[in-house]
Length: 445
Ligand code: G6P
Ligand code: MN
Image (cartoon, rainbow, N blue to C red; front, side, top):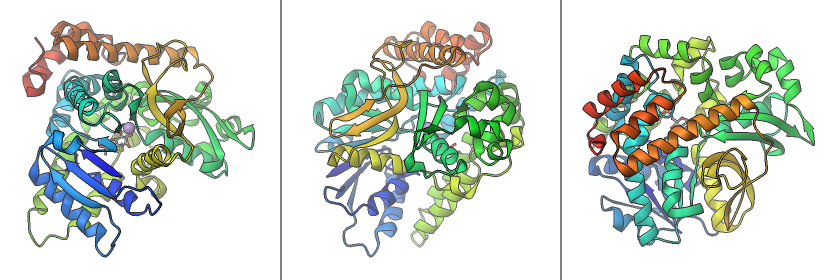
C-alpha cells in the first residue's frame, strides 16, 4: 500500500512514519512518498526517517518529490499536512490579530480565518488533482483549520476526505483514565466542530460517569481540561469542552496572555523549527536526536499561555506523546483492512446535527470500516453550544465563499461575524492587515 504525505517536509512527519514502523500486519503501508514544495525540508525529514528505519529490513520505503501530480498518482492514501505561508505566516496571523486586540490562534478566531482564507484555495486545488489522478484514494486531512479545510476538500472529494485532530481523542483518554476506565472501554459522547466540541457523556459499562467526574473537585483537578476551565465552570456547563474552547470562554485572559508573551506560539515555533532545519544542513548532524529534542520542547510548551492564564501548571507526561499519528494510523487501518472501529473524526454531517445542513463538516464519533467513516447518532447540543457551532459554521461558509469568489467584502463579513471579533471596523482592519502581509491573500479584491 502506498501513502503520499503532502507537506512531507513537515516537522511532524516522523511521528507518522514511527507509527507505520510499528505496524507489522498484512496490508500495511510499504511505500511512503513525501511531497513538499521545499526540497531542503524534504531532505531534512528524509534523514530523520532513515535513522528511524535503520536496521529494520521491513521499514516502508521512502521517496521524496517536489512534483505534486507525481506524488498523487498511484496513492492509496493521501495525508494532507500542508502549511500555506509556513510558520512565518502563522506568526503574522497572530501579530496582525493581536494588534487589533483579538486572538490570532491558527484555528480559532481571526487567525483561523486568515489561515483558512489562504489555505482553502490550495486545498481545493489538491482535492481537484486527487479527484483526477487518484480517484480511489482516501484523503486524510490534518491541515488546519482542519474542519474548514476538510469541508472545502469534501466539495470535490465527497466522503473520501476525512479530517482528523487528536484533541478530542486526548480529552477522551484523559477523562476515561480519571474515572478509572481503560480508554478503549469508554464511550465518549462528543460532538461539535473541529476545536469546538463538548463531551456530554462518558459511558463505561453502560453507566454515565460524567456526573461523578463533574461532582468531584479532585478528579477535575487531575487532568488538563479540568484545570484549564476550573471545576465551577465545568459544572455549570455540565460538559467538558475541547481545550480550544478556552479561547472562547476565557477570551480576555487568553488575548492578554498572548499579548504579554515574549513570543507568540507561531513565532516560537518558527524560530525553533528554523533551528532544527538549519541543523539538518550539517552532514554530521544526529538527525533523529535533534528532531526528538525539538519535538519534546514543542510538546512541553503546547498551549503554555492558556495554562499560564488559567494557573493550570505544566502538562502531564502522558499528554506529551501526541497521538495524532495514532488516530491517522487507526483510521487508515480501519479503511484499508476493514478493521471496524470508532474514532472521532471530521466528516459531513448528513443528519447528525439537526441545526446544520447535510454537507457541513462536523467533528463526531464515527464508525469506520472499508466503506469509510459513518457518523453515529448523538444527542442534540444545548442551546449555548448550538449557538456557537452555528455562528462559527456560518463564518466558515463565508470563508469558503470568499475563497471561491475572491471577494474582499465577503472576507470582511467572515471576520465580522466571528463571535471573537467585536466590531465590523476591526474586521476591516484585519482584512487590511492580513492582505498587506500575506502574498497568499492577493486573490482578494
Ligand atoms: C493539537 C491540535 C492540532 C495542532 C497541534 C500542534 O494536536 O489539535 O490541531 O496542530 O496540537 O499544535 P502546535 O501549537 O504545537 O503547532
Ligand atoms: Mn487539531
